[in-house]
Image (cartoon, rainbow, N blue to C red; front, side, top):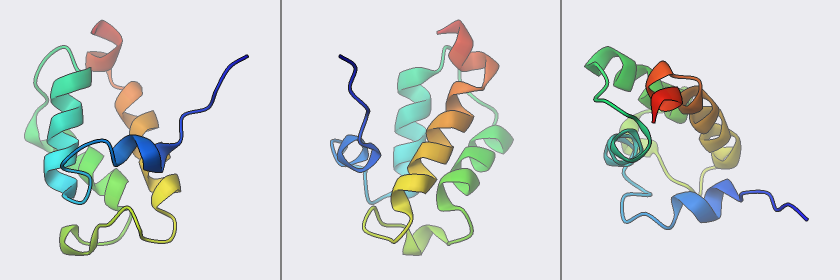
Length: 84
């Protein structure tokens, strides 16, 4: 039997869950084989925010689950992720 990751529960395991910039940095450090250029990190942050601003980010926003899933897919598609 396989289980599906609950993105909201997953992100909330981090002390940075409500801090979008710090959470993106944390996940890049954790999952990528080498540091990303700032432009790529900015792309990932924008993917997570999906139109909102950093100050408005919250895991309690409507649509947060879809945003987190979109971020995780983008992260896993990076060549740096494939090397880890």
